[in-house]
Image (cartoon, rainbow, N blue to C red; front, side, top):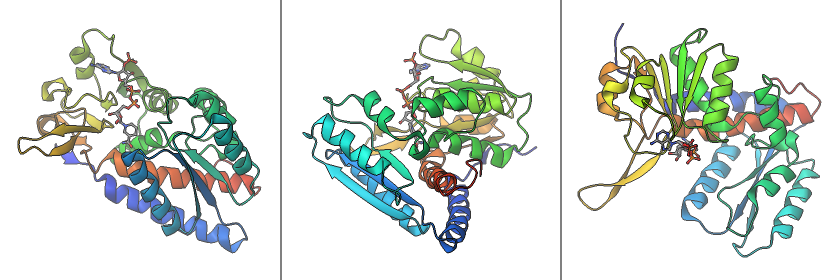
Length: 293
Ligand code: NDP
């Protein structure tokens, strides 16, 4: 088996967007144009970039894109009434509230206010519960994208030992649930985990989502493993600029892995593509079709 294959997240994401665009065209022909509404509160520069990219890609696949901006000083009740208005708007099938929210807003209350059928980020407790129960709801985008990349190199996942580094509600936990549903044996590690390198060395699939630049060393990788690096970390370079790196020491890990995702160009591009896929799924279910696409 050849080693060190680099998984091209950009190409897989482009293919997924093409599939979504084709299905959107069919839905439009049957009289329903899927619509995605994004709420951006405040002027966080990274969030502005994400929201712009999301709107652009939404339009490119033939969906309607609605953008709502609120000043950072807006009150929580204003945000909640906007969410309510979008919940009731039949042209809107997906609602995404861009995180992080300003400090005076209770994120949990806002995420719970979104209609679970329109919760394309998959963060509503109802969708988290459905995922824990084996599926049927909307699945968070980054975990979904990570699974698609894993399956792009290993279609059958059954029986393999998957080690997930990180247990956040938006990345680590949902990835662990998806791997379990795919019949993997799953270990979830976190900041209190002891003997982390030994645990990593047992992983057929290593999914890193900890936000620690290049912490996972090459010799923590089992020979022939598949490495999915979710981490996105900005680090300074010698010339005073910055660059993006993952949670895994890429070049060293590549020597041992069967396949590995790069940063950037791995999981990152999959996130928006999966958001579009979720919006399509939400539109189908709201227009009377099955939620399971
Ligand atoms: P969080 O900070 O919410 O969670 C990090 C997790 O990693 C926690 O469970 C934490 O453990 C664990 N952790 C932290 N340090 C260590 C350590 N030294 N050893 C073992 N475990 C550790 O981050 P997110 O889940 O939101 O994101 C994770 C990474 O993924 C980030 O780099 C983020 O930028 C990236 N990301 C990428 C996306 C994409 O589109 N590709 C989308 C979302 C996130 P504990 O629970 O004990 O604190």
